[in-house]
Amino acid sequence: MQKIKCILFDVFGTVVDWRESIASEASLLGKKYKINGNWYEFADKWRNAYNTEIQSVNQGKRNWISVDDIHMERLETLLEEYKFPKLEKEKKISFNQSWHRLKPWPDSVEGLQRLKSKYIIAPLSNGNMSLLTNMGKYSNLPWDAIISAELSTKYKPDPSVYQLGAKLMGCKTSETLMVAAHKFDLIGALNAGLLAAMVIRPKEFGERKADIDNDTRWEYYSKDFNELADQLNCK
Image (cartoon, rainbow, N blue to C red; front, top):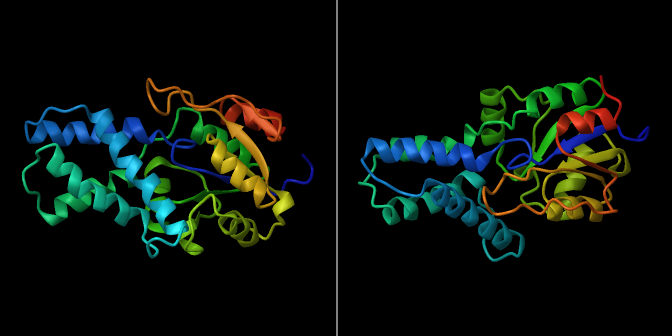
């Protein structure tokens, strides 16, 4: 515990509830145009495109592309699939920026404030800088800094992303704790030399069960950010 100097956080699903937020915004747009749909399924399909495309970037199958641009690519096809009328460019951009307006889990802001009282805290997310900046402002996330995979032009779980995060915070990888709700992210952090803490989010995927089982490789395992703060002796 004494060797930790900074804490980095995954954001989508760990700090914010992307699925509920996106489904809610999609539902509002659907009502405006009198379109019925399964908006949670809409959110899942939108998110799945992100997962596919970041792998393509890391594998060298396509050049660097930001998460905002990945989301816009998929949005174009989803609007057709769900039979929306042709929207003006500005309206599509505004809807795409739903990802800038994701709402935090109930414990996120308080828990982050507690952790911030003792440690340097920052997101280490695949989201681009403008997305993370706007989201932080929208949801009052008390970051000390913002670190995006955009700065390394690779996506997590590439080791270079985690190593850059620690370097930018002025910390050794062995002094840096990565917090995430996803095992692939924590394994990526461990492979890059960071410490790992799992904070479970059982409802991230709705009825589809999230993988929340503990693993001996994590230094910490907790049900929310407040419990993690307790484990790290934060006020």
